[in-house]
Image 1 (cartoon, rainbow, N blue to C red):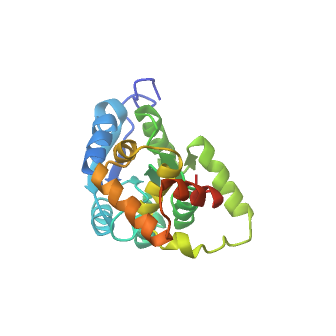
Image 2 (image 1 turned 180 degrees about the horizontal axis):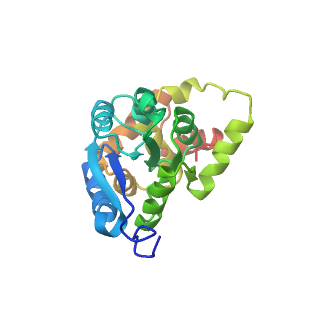
Image 3 (image 1 turned 90 degrees about the vertical axis):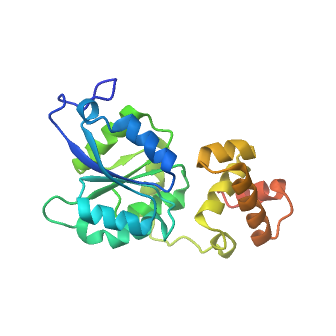
Length: 231
């Protein structure tokens, strides 16, 4: 892989990719970054914004690699993996999945890997590294952002099932994302930019989290999240 993101070995090699993410602007950004096929070797053959769309597009296009967001309307990335299991298991031209998410939470990483994804990278990845990761997944390699590999090793080395946290289970995936960012000290505007949502939506999620957890303010949220090692 060259420094400008050109696929190794020139432009002869190709990989067909589907983008699955519920934020249109993010999909457009990824398409602009990696989708110039003559330069990168990546051909974006479809996009989807929720679980049902994803399954339909993936089934119709049979890409080599799917870039899959973890948190999607309709059941999340794990549901896409479940419904696409026959495509992943195909003897010829299996569809492989690479999770691409803003979340770096252990339970998100472990969930999609258990579901069959070949790797997990965060949205801080550069375009060049993302292209490289896509080709590696196409080859059957497992690819992770550096600190995430440890989560997977620890999870599969342990025979103990993780304990159920009923309080955490009350929160939606998006509320968990907002909670973690609040606990890390992000301002509402920073969270909105990070998650590609409005400040008003962030405020709505924070209010819902406070109500569900019966907490009063962001300082209590931070203590709650820290006690559960969610930060």
